[in-house]
Image 1 (cartoon, rainbow, N blue to C red):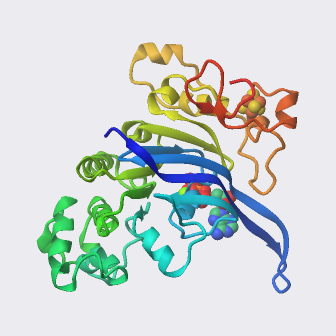
Image 2: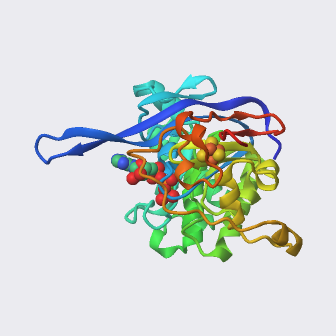
Length: 329
Ligand SMILES: Nc1ncnc2c1ncn2[C@@H]1O[C@H](COP(=O)(O)OP(=O)(O)OP(=O)(O)O)[C@@H](O)[C@H]1O
Ligand code: SF4
Ligand SMILES: [Mg+2]
């Protein structure tokens, strides 16, 4: 779906440092894990922003910050102009209604002791104003139908459903308050490949129908390409490249993005020949002590002296149509 209008989500210089402590009794802070370290982006109505990056780069922490499940160390998250990152009480409740999360693991994210109908209708307990009590049963049936489940199965329990069906339950619950934004943290990673496409197609259909905007987190680049309008690439808590999906996939300029993409199988043989596989040396450094300057420099084959001294900012550089954070993009 084509994104329209003003941004509905604005993220500015978002930072989350987890304290690193020592000692069991006198927990002394000895440092910080810089899980998210200055991330900025915008999201428009009906748009999908895909987020990719290696394990531990801060994707889930970002998702939790966006939905106020974690509070940021600094920075701001605005939904339709209203700050969620520092909101409390009734204000937080109101802003949060508009941004919901679909979690990775459909096996652990649903309460096994609740019926599927109660799980899907649970958000109405917190927001009774959305659907009057007498209409809730009907609303839940409608939600189940919308995600392709049998509404007559509302009184069954999660264990009576398959993984793909459970993820549909999670999506139905995410839709219950009719949010404009849904954050999907690896929503299909735990599912069989054959089921993944069905769930992705469902998310796309819901977007067309209701104009929902997604932040879609995954480490599978082909899933991201399929669903995203724009893509952001994260490395060690920072966004290193951000732009339209065709731009990122066909003309990546950041060495990290180039390496990530080089590892993805290319369907057409011509593309395969043109593209050389880049194998990254070593593991990502610890987010507790990231390298100076450019965080990617310890694994970058293009690194020079300036990369250790100056941090490259995420910006549109001459000759490119999208933003990247590399001195030599
Ligand atoms: N509550 C926490 N306390 C301390 N450190 C944390 C906490 N949550 C996450 N971290 C650390 O922050 C970093 C980012 O973690 P995060 O879960 O956001 O990564 P991710 O990109 O989602 O990884 P994955 O692809 O494995 O899901 C990691 O180093 C992780 O160990
Ligand atoms: S700034 Fe330097 S180290 Fe960082 S990606 Fe660019 S070339 Fe590599
Ligand atoms: Mg994660």
